[in-house]
Image 1 (tube, rainbow, N blue to C red):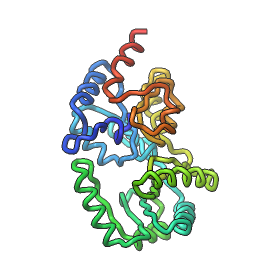
Image 2 (cartoon, rainbow, N blue to C red):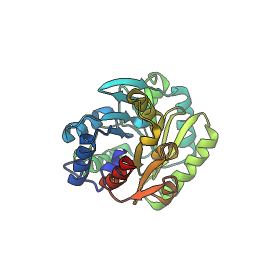
Image 3 (cartoon, rainbow, N blue to C red):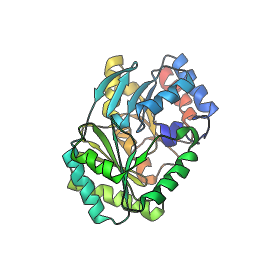
Image 4 (cartoon, rainbow, N blue to C red):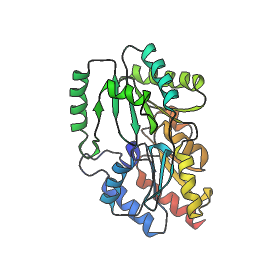
Length: 276
């Protein structure tokens, strides 16, 4: 299952997950089901969530760039920094107002902005303060960002492109994701509401999850997946028991077979499948 917008919905600022969702996870584990978090978050953040729940849960992090099975890393994929630099230059030339960030082994949430960095720094600090337990460290530094692409980018895992929070920005993000997909067919370009996510072509939540299924010898027909955004579409397309959150965008909903309002509403579906 996905975290943001899915297991974290509705968002609980100080406890990560609702009581009903935690009870569902503990019920699923007690029934012998194998739990996997498939998320764009990094492993350190997800580990905090797992410790809060108190269960053994495998991790597909950064949308499949990293896969952890029984607390051991079994897969890691990197981007070509030269290729990402081309994407970066394409975006900043086409858009006067935009932000980008990169995630790598050595740094997370390294932000580049064409705007006023002092102002952006204040906005970011306020935004992350209101995130409560969901906040993560970040660095806004254009020079460090460019240096990472030019000379020290051999550990890049993900590029994010931001266009703002308005409805107009959301449409722009969607349109640009389609343009980039055509311009860079050897990269994975995913639309996530107001954000575009760029990853290696082979990277997806579905591919990462399959590595764990192989280890556990679990058949794909016995897998239930649930998510809410564009990076969850590979899951919906790959597994027949697919569930999308009711608040997801209509463009995302069409890929899943079922719609639920809360993750714990999976329980009767799993019980029915177990009894059939």
